[in-house]
Figure 1 (cartoon, rainbow, N blue to C red):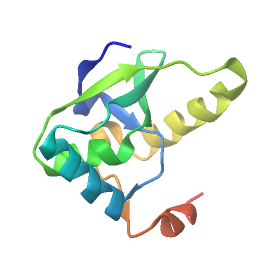
Figure 2: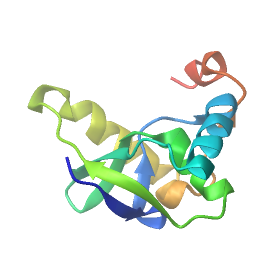
Figure 3: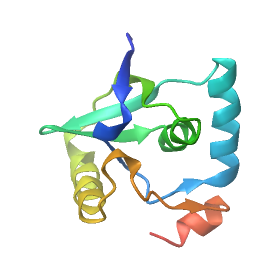
Figure 4: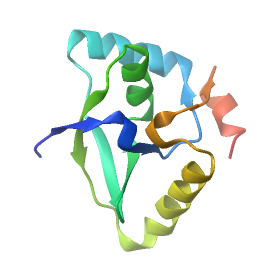
Length: 113
């Protein structure tokens, strides 16, 4: 699947937060050029990061404005989950990962659900 450079300011996170150890690992991968592309699901005119939220946060911390990405699709039955996540991200003002919270662990992030 082909990839492209996604502009971070146009993206919304699917997850409720990033996880610090994963963000730090993704920073090292981005610096080494070995990070996997993020997966973006388009809903209407909006772009939701369904895989790679920690990578986007790492890119922001490295001062990047774009990140390698690819488009993905999800089955119709799971779409309400993604649509709900997009609504939540919009309500929380998280476009461009602005004020995206960072938890110390996956267990801490799980408390946000």
